[in-house]
Length: 148
Image (tube, rainbow, N blue to C red; front, side, top):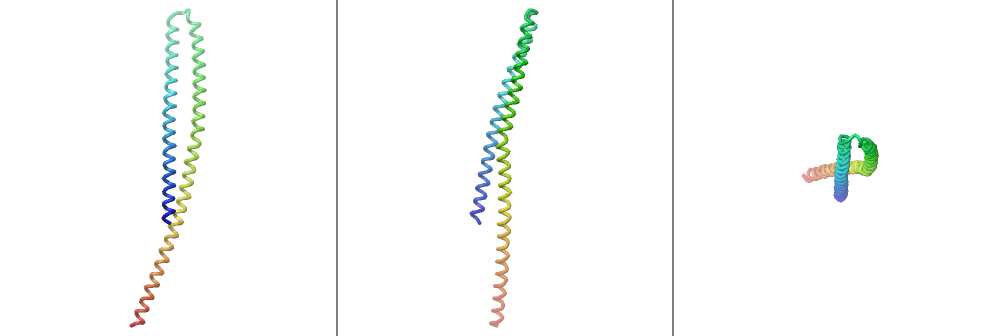
């Protein structure tokens, strides 16, 4: 019974470690993705500033400015597409973690059921031992009475 308890505790701590490691990996991945998105956003903002400067510089650059605007729209679309792709990859990468969490919950449920069953068996043994002790005590009293 003690070996089962130890095994259950070891399994539970192992699962907790694995879950903690997965969460740390996920957090690290999120930090890198946020940094990438931020850098990309800054680049888009810089391009926007350039376009505005060129428009104000001269009227003859209007045509070139419109071309750059079109390019910026393409870049924005590509950025949105890249962001959408990154988000779908991110969601896909979350599925194993969610599945692992689900498996941990299932395992915890099985462990709890086993612990409850072991506790019931232990309680039954205690009750049986108590009855045996009462019977033994009663027999000793009878022996004492017979001796008297």
